Length: 229
Length: 185
Image (cartoon, rainbow over all chains, first blue to last red; front, side, top):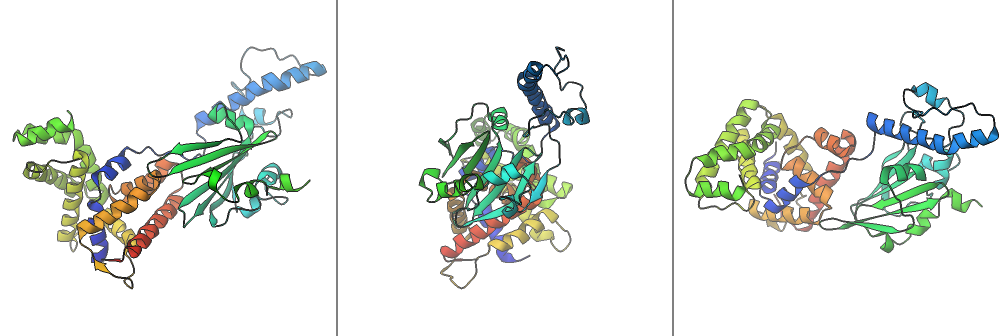
């Protein structure tokens, strides 16, 4: 091992106490890659509630539905196969339990996309300087997420697309089309939820102010849903 | 017991200072030593030596952040052990860390100054202070506390590969920064 690496090690040893203290106290925010069992259960419960609130009254009014006035929640005790088999489940149902799909960020965009809805909302033009970090991923068929990194600015841009119900479920009240800021030690992160029909597209930047990013809205409106009239 | 009270025990030359330190920060020091040396017996020896070293240094030293002060002693003792025994023993934790740090060594074309460790620490602190909070925490946890890439990846909820990529970017960024400063090692 080179002496220079050891010298660097010694240099790192002597960094400011305050930096060490701050780094030790920092709580990492877990990126949502895989859902825990609890989350899946929660999501299924939320979907079941939606079914109760929306689908059942609809069926009841049509007079064709069977009597389903049981007081127990629908997801309780239902197997995954039983639940997934419900034909009335909304298109963007969170009951979809398909496995995570990874693909390139390019293939997230439009017609040939793995997912037509996500593809139509995904911007075709990405801000200059941002390189895809690890392609794009659809999680559980519910959320599409893609990360980009700007080497020079050391900024991470994350694009996340999901049905608005999913965002509400995850975050509670979601105010759209407003820039939010998250203060950090040296820089400020910013993020925005852009409403698009029943879907929301979240753009977040780890260290840039969206309001000052040239071409941000051009990127947003480069999504096929805006360009294909 | 509060750090300040423990430090006062050192100043009073009260041996309870050692037991209080061990109780409060023994786990932290052992964690660092194990991350670096990855040999239990040697790590334990380093931690014992850490208490002894703290006893010798306080007074007159008054640590600004007691935890970081102890961790720093443990790091220094760990690398001393590595240097003394490198021919006989393999300390995988430190070896991996040092091989990664090779990426941060600035190219020598723009050399303006051959820096001392203290100056180098100041530069690294300056670079760290300018990083986003998470990036700074990642670098410090990896290269100061010696936490493994897999452990950090788990904490952040990302894959080890993705974390390794983040680390590589940080190392390259440090290298660029040191080159801009005209530093040579």
